[in-house]
Length: 419
Image 1 (tube, rainbow, N blue to C red):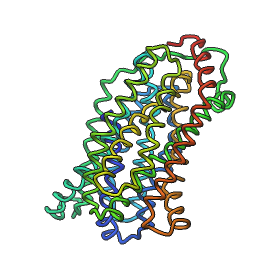
Image 2 (image 1 turned 90 degrees about the vertical axis):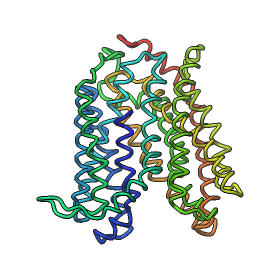
Image 3 (image 1 turned 60 degrees about the vertical axis):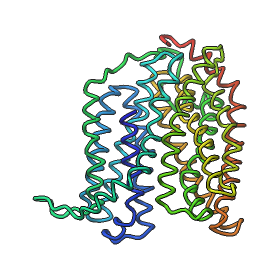
């Protein structure tokens, strides 16, 4: 969880440094968007699959250790970049390093804990993004402002370092200490390894069970359209509709993510384990559907609230239930995956989920607002419509998937060596 938190701080901090980076490197908004999006996300999603294959066969602890080291070093390298392409290359390295973490982590945690406790354990890990994003939004601006007041730093053999460069070094260097912690982490024994009767490659395995896996991945990915759209556009709603300053939005939204969404993640894990203890074999999927259904009214209402106070209250409730959802996709997928495919299934879900949610969500909201609703001031109405439709479709997809999920659970229980 500490490593996951660190990774989100490292990837989120760039968004707070847009103006000084554009000024010093003399780049356009389009070039900066490539640094924030393509440079990181393309390699983060694509490299996840081969790295996950290594995690399913070798030492997951070692893969995570190397991954943390790479993304920390490359974050520091961002601080030494003096051109667009140097910074682009460093961001690619950050994405590759971070791709090593989650597939291996989910697999390890699933072996550390039996099914009755697994959802809560995965929930603790899944708090990382909300803690990292919340801290970056809440205190990142203040730290950057403090560094900016000290001005450029002159170092021997390196020369002048601008405040934005110092910031990258400051947030990247502690990752090396986190990597060192994995020297003492124990690699757990693998449980639930299928010895016979299952395909030897992950894609044929998934295709043979497509009514479970692809349906779940689709449902969770469509939910991501709403979640990513909110991260991208709810600040604009407060700025354009309620007249807030960006700094106000950062503090308020960061606090909601940290103190509202983060507890929701733990509640999601507890709810899944509670349902499981009461005989609900499809507990993680059932808990996800319940959380998703609770999101719908608040996702629709938040951008349409007449005052900022009401909008914040509604946003807090939506963020809580979105947090409840956060760990449940991984819990559901791990429950029906054999050990030798667990990391790869996670990576494939991340690949598809990121392409759908990041690739479609924010763009659909903006395009619908511009082309149909009449322009930027209607971004709130567009966010309400798009997120509401996405959540309804996602919820319906998962409800229809439940019978196939239960059949896959029966198969998982029959696997030799399962636990």
